[in-house]
Length: 486
Image 1: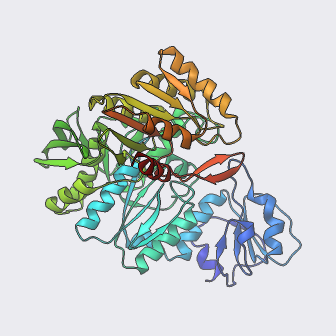
Image 2: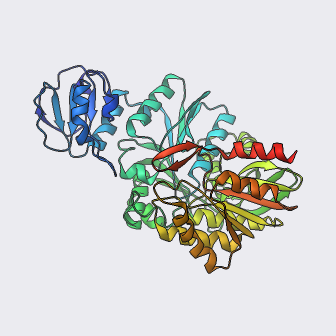
Image 3: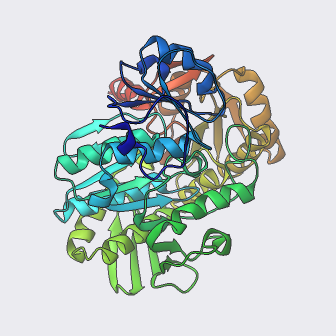
């Protein structure tokens, strides 16, 4: 494509060279640059792409997009912009011929529930015969393709590339998780969503490598709704006024406690031999009864959110009900092992509110004992660990603290922080650093009626230790447990 077309709509200064030239592709990783590519120098939390310009030159980049004044002797074009992340987002959209305009786009944001809600919407649309793609923490999915991603919301180039590939494959709708980090880093800049959806907002994701304060966090969420044609929000959520500040789009509401366009008036918990789930009755724009095979009131919120999306998109209600009953989400309240004696659930919850909601919900199902296996992530706020120990310890009959991505910290240090909270509530706990050993111990020593909860890893298939990711999959461990039980 001609460089001048790639730069359409972008404010820039031409420091050197000319824009009347053909370019091959756009890269923001200097190691992946090829001849005649554009190299965009992104500034991140831990690195600055301007430091790798020499590497991009060695790989024969033809164009440099920068946010700093630089001098390069080589025969290349240098484009200066105020924000290289915004530039990358707009350039990628131009390069792939603005594919988001050819899709019905549904963006889902919130502190918790994004993954489950997007999966519910995706499955419900597929069940109704809609060709729908999915982008989120479990990857990019459409047709029979699954692509791994490193972030909940990928970089803008990957988003636009995926949109283009979906359009080429006949996909008409896409539902995606839109994280606050993605808005902070302008990965979604320039995209207007057909539907912007809020699951909830709580005080979280504040700290190193995340958000400076709660105000910034909420302001990043607000960006989705400022750039949506229609908006769907949880009317029971906190901070709605801030999240919806200056939003002009039509707003639809759902909820359980407060009045809403779609409201749940009755919830029934179901705990049967091979089923943990919920039945609920709605009123408002839909008067009906629904059943989901994922336990918990907060999953009722996720479900009615997904139902509301399908209603706005005019999806057949019977197709919606059928798909909802069969939805399962990897690592989100996933019933991973059922035996005559005990059940094992896997969940990705690792925030304070997520874990509080999870353990309180499962206690409502009245298991013989609730055994929680969890750890704290390394290089994260210590106060969060104190709170997790207090929250989980207060609701569990036994806690086993173990490894969960210690990163560059020692497990003993992380566990000591968790124990502050555990001791505060007088929790019964033990330490087993090896997560595989911890899971096997809990399962092989379970009592009749126990519910064992594996917290924090969810869909992840690794342990991050000292800068390296080592393969680890809880489902593999449970397969071994099943063999041992036999």
